[in-house]
Every structure is written in C-alpha cells, then in structure tokens.
Image 1 (cartoon, helix red, strand yellow):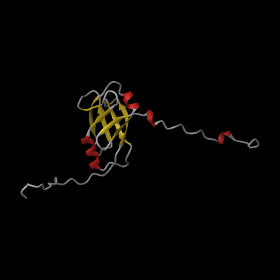
Image 2: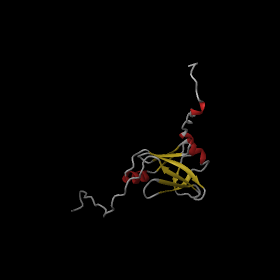
Image 3: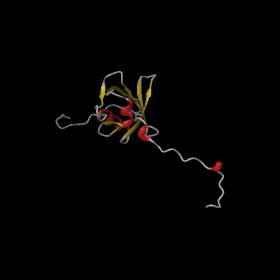
Image 4: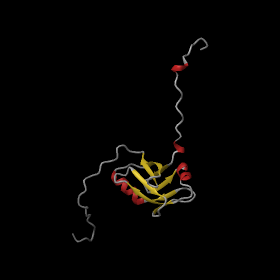
Length: 140
C-alpha cells in the first residue's frame, strides 16, 4: 500500500449516520397504542393533551396542542390509546405498526405527522350501503 498513489479529489466522504431516533416520531400499534419517541416527547415539552385529526386517506395526522379533545399522552412515557383510530386505518388497508414523522407547523399551530409506512396510500373502496348482518333472534 505504501507505493499506491491516491488522488484524494476522487474520494467521497462517508455518509453521516442516520440518526432517526433524533427525529420526532409517533407510532401507532394495531390495538390503538400511540407512542411518542424520545425526540417527540421532548419536543412537545409539558403538553400532553391534544386535539387529533387524520386525513381522509390516513397519510397525515394532526395534533393541536392548543386545543383539548381526545388525545391524552401519559406524562412519563408519552403513550396514549385510540383503538378507534387503529380500526379506521386498518379498514383502509394499512399494516401495523404505523410510523409518522412529526413536524411542527407554525402556520397550523399543530404537529403534522406524515406516514412513513406506505407509499402510495391504499385506495378507498367504493362506498355502498352498510351491510346488515343477521343475528340470532332477528326474526329474519
């Protein structure tokens, strides 16, 4: 190796390590468990109550810290439950766990989560009449 000549201008720098743990993220489990990662937990400060919204295709979540309503994260672990949200996203065709990259949007005064798990989002099935399932004793 001592005899090898190198043209250092032809060499490239190593890529920086991917520090995904430093980016605010929110994960959603199949049974409705919401988990803030450490970066998100620290970014929201002492706020633990949010009003939550989701986009019609499930790709985006909004958490409004200035409004109470529906989402309460534990003060120590940054966890919450919302089984209904999991059921809605499962019915849309999403596979769990889901991971949302969270970003503060000053113009909305909200945290915006973008789903990192699926691209493109699942297509909506045609909506028809609700199905009525027969139960014992319905008299039908």
